[in-house]
Length: 98
Image (tube, rainbow, N blue to C red; front, side, top):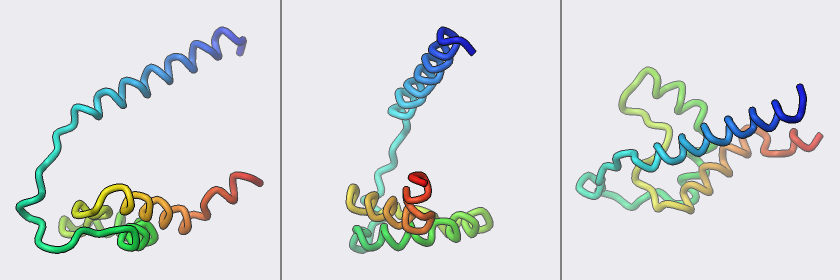
C-alpha cells in the first residue's frame, strides 16, 4: 500500500469519526429529575458498576429492569469510577505495554 492510499484511508476514517461525533451531539436527552428519589451515585458507585459491567451487560440482555450504567449519577466522578473499575477488571493498559 503506497503512502497516498494510506493517507486517503486515514482521511476517510477521520471523516467518518467526525461525522459520528457531530451526529451524536443531536441525541435527545431525557429529564430524569422527576423520577430521582435518592442520592445520585458517585465515584464508588461508578467503580463498583465498572467492575460488574460484564455481568450487568449479560443480565441486561434478558431483563429490562437491569441496566449496565446508572442514570442517576453525579457526572464526572461516576464516569471516572466506572472507567477505572472496567479498567481494573480487564487488566488496564498493562497488557498493551508488553
